[in-house]
Image 1 (cartoon, rainbow, N blue to C red):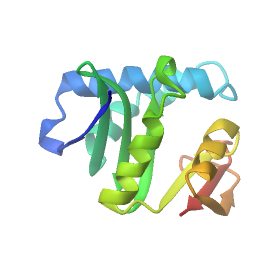
Image 2: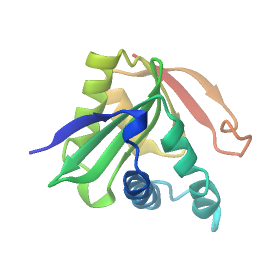
Image 3: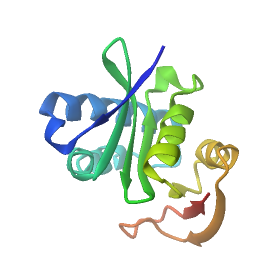
Image 4: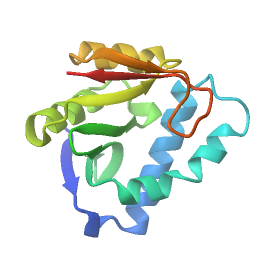
Length: 148
């Protein structure tokens, strides 16, 4: 049903990055209702570089099209996004399971204001060990740091 494929840095074509940016935007609009107007666009401008630069990138495809992706740096999950139309279908779970089993993922940070994501990671066995009042850019979006 789903194929999870590791995409090496050299395989990150502009077409793939563009498709993953579309997945990112749809996912953020579906789950990050705490972001004020214009913030998705501001953050979105940084997403192509983040996708291109993350050391490990796992992509879940359906019929050859990306429907979810997970980026890691070492044991830290830097990003996980699933296409809005595909939420609740096991894509995020399969990506996290692959990341933990095959790549040693043990930590993640998640927006505290996104309770669906917090609950997802808790169901995946992660627990909060630290909280910040701002995100990594200093914006007022509290982060929960979780580990498994």
